[in-house]
Image (cartoon, rainbow, N blue to C red):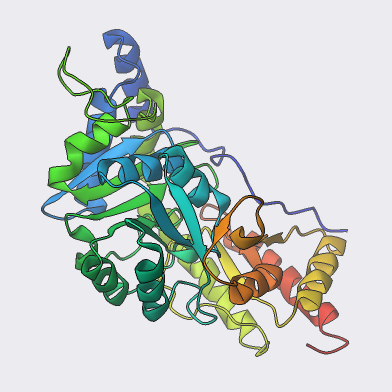
Length: 373
């Protein structure tokens, strides 16, 4: 029996770089542990230099959910927010935390995102003031058409790109009413334990910081600018982030190699749909859309028998959560949620172990498809 390979849910147990301990010592020496301290500011500068653009600001958060909430609050909008039914429930939680009403919309069967014409119709019929566009599995792409629709309706846009830090970003995402939020949770490619970061137009920086600090202004005694949450990143997590910056490029390269191995292996299973562009994401994991819910169940059972855990995403569809406002039926999202499996990707794992995992998955798929796809 092979060892049971599970998805890792913590930062890999590797020796911390020497500068990490110097950062921690400095944190204790100056007695600053949170509230946009010097390490958080330094981390933001490094993130902006690596992944941002001229004219943008970069603001860290304690997690991506708080970052999404802060972005909605900083947009100055209220009322309804459109979001796809095929996403993680944290997207919906962020909308509710901002005091706004999530309205769920179905997605396209090929892109797994809201189609521009569907978005246009939903904005017309709901008068939503904001839209949360989700990058499924951190996969970037050209969303110029969707942004144009939102701009025509005067709707602010928050891009939930939780798994995508390090992937390609479009110049279209740097407009004044567009915010892009990434996660740095322990399961994400850029992992610091807990954390998030918001990229936005530089004119939104003060509003974002206020939204992440109970709505308080930057100056002592200033009146609140609006409602807010306690969403600031701690100095300790910022220190972990600074240390992670030093090794992220190599981890990202290994993740893309692992994704390439999955793509090559899945080419022998034409009934399974999967991404083809290895530059599309940093690959928290690799999505594989099975031909039916039954095939997905058979695959998961076969993999478990071989000692390998396979997870389902995004299941159930948000349209099936209790108390959710749904704009029309969501058959595509509900079908995707029943068929989508994600394959583990490890950015700091030896090639031999990755090869072993790929071989086990191939074996499990052969067993699952014995009775036909």
